[in-house]
Every structure is written in structure tokens, then in C-alpha cells.
Length: 261
Ligand code: NAP
Image 1 (cartoon, rainbow, N blue to C red):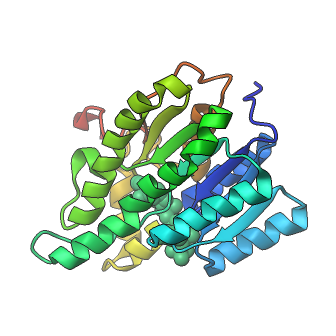
Image 2: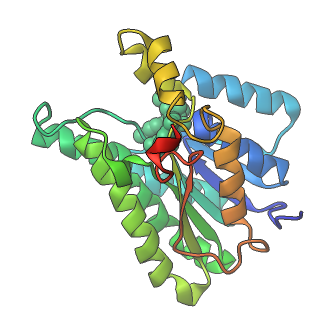
């Protein structure tokens, strides 16, 4: 199936590790040119070294996305370097555990900076280019937006707002033929997830407990499975009439009958 993404310029925030890395790889496999907007962590460096060695059309623009000015500069750099933007995948985020009781107003605001404000900032600054290309936006949200988790108000608020913005932007951008959709993962093994597991007493036991409750296959979702949904939603040919959707890729974790597990 031809997804029609060849040579398209697609920005993937946090695209050098975890789910974002999976999305970058899937976009590259479709012949797109990928711009990873991210901090330069060890994982990211490793991924970029592999991309360079393979001669992949993948470029890193370093950015701490909580800085809205840096978001504006980064979009300008992409436009200067590539002359266009077709896709924006808002993906970078962190489940930072700012609870209602345990947190503070300041930490809640910081969490919104880490998880939400850059989704808006990048879409806002990329909009003129997206209008020219009749592009697509995919927001990576989370099951936490629908289920809650406990002790993570900033993350939950951000993930819920991302779903609302997906509908809002889909409505606002109809006239420009720009499509906006969201993908909601539940349990995906990534560096972020591994870090969280390690904070628990017995990570292996916790992982077994979690996977035993995932109806389809009793296993974690793969980054490549989130990526497959994302490239479909980016595709101007295959998802040309799909907008404002919230696609949950979770092995039935959120919606299937609990009696099944
Ligand atoms: P991850 O393993 O931490 O990868 C995210 C990448 O983005 C990392 O390279 C990280 O940098 C970078 N990044 C994060 N915040 C950034 C910022 N403010 N500025 C620049 N770079 C930033 O995370 P993941 O598990 O793949 O999660 C990706 C998305 O999926 C998030 O939106 C998350 O909420 C969502 N999600 C994940 C799961 C899951 O099970 N993993 C479930 C539901 C939703 P560092 O390497 O320096 O941290």
C-alpha cells in the first residue's frame, strides 16, 4: 500500500527514542524526510548515529520543547532547511507524577509546559507551512486521558487537553484541508516506561501483573504498532477523509470487558 508520504517533511517531537523513534522509523520506511525535534539524550544520540550510518533522511534539531521560543526557532529552522512541512507528530512528553495532594501549583504548571504547551506552540508556528502543504497533525495522547491514573494531575490534564485540541484543530483547519487526529497508547515498553517501572519495588512482578490485564495477547503494545497507526493517519492518500479521530491502540486494554482478563 502506498501511503503517499515519499519525500514529505515530517516533524516528530521526541522522535529519537521510544514511541517517537518507532514513528520516525515508520515515516522513513515510507520514504519521508524526518526531522526529530528533541533533547539530545544518550538514546537519541544512539538513534541518530544509526541513522547517519544508514544514510537515512533523518535530521535532529535539538530543542528543549518546554521553551516556546525554542519551538518557534525550531520550526523556522525546519522551514529554512527543507522549505516545507507536511506532517507534525506531537509526541514528546513525560508522565511526571504531579499529584493533587503531593504536587504544587508550580509543579502542575511545569507539567503543562512539559506535556501540553509545546503541542500548541509547534502547531501554531507550523501552521502557515501546514496550510501551504495541506498537511496533517497527529497528537500522541494517552489512555490516562480517559481512565485517569492517580497521582499525575499535570500529565492527565495535558493528555485530556490534547484530545480536545485534536477535535478543536480538526474543526478550525477543515477549510485548509489539514487533518488532525490523535493516537492513544496504553502500555508500550519505552525508556520512559522502563524508568517508571524501576521506581517500583519489584519491576518484573509489576510488569507481569500489567501484561496479564492486556486482553489481546497479554503483552505490551509495540512502538511499531503505535507508529503504524500514526503513519496511516498522516497518509494523504489512505486517511484523506479521517479527521478529528481518537484512535486507541492498546490491545483492548481500555474498552474490553474486564471479565476477559
Ligand atoms: P520516552 O521513552 O521518554 O521518549 C520520549 C523522547 O522525547 C525522549 O527522547 C525524551 O528525551 C524526549 N522528550 C521528552 N520531553 C521532551 C522535551 N520537553 N523536550 C525535548 N525532548 C523531550 O517516552 P515514550 O514512552 O516514548 O512516550 C512518548 C509519548 O507517548 C508521550 O507523549 C507519552 O505520554 C505517550 N504515551 C506513552 C505510553 C507508554 O506506555 N510508553 C503510554 C501512553 C502514552 P529524554 O530521552 O531526554 O527523556
